[in-house]
Image 1: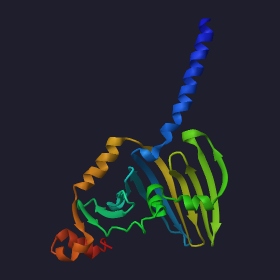
Image 2 (image 1 turned 135 degrees about the vertical axis):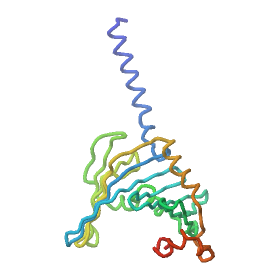
Image 3 (image 1 turned 180 degrees about the horizontal axis):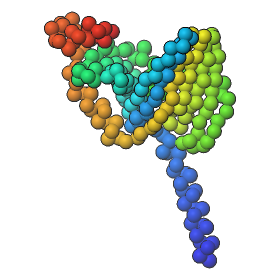
Length: 225
């Protein structure tokens, strides 16, 4: 076989192998993920607000971090589907664990809303307007108008991530825009491990710990609700 022909055959083989294995990279729901967003809100009177938001997730834990507020909400999913919500106050290195939801209330929709910001139930109701790219770069464009509310979604189906999501009505519009994605296992693990070290108080025990100056301040600010 001539060298040039052999080279072409080898390149074709490598390309086929790469295409066969490449979709596995898209299975990000089995990977640790850090996704950074901006959330921009507009009101009908012209008020505008922008905040930073970071979605952290593993297979069993999801956290919504609001860096400018020094607050993180975390949901942990047990084997039976039961969800536990913990609120971390990063400025005070303190956490409050709220009542665990029963498996009946811990629905897949509830978990999906935390895990990927939109549920499959909502996506299935929306109209697919088109798509772009392929494999990991595939983006699907959806829209839905319901009860005076318009939903516009750019969805990364192979990453289970929102690229852009806008909800608008006559009074308010709110838009999530993906800025970056990081699959660094150590970085995500460190984020959750650090918060596992916070002083944790069960919500039911707050009344018995009002002498704690940090808890007293959180109660005064209404953070415990």
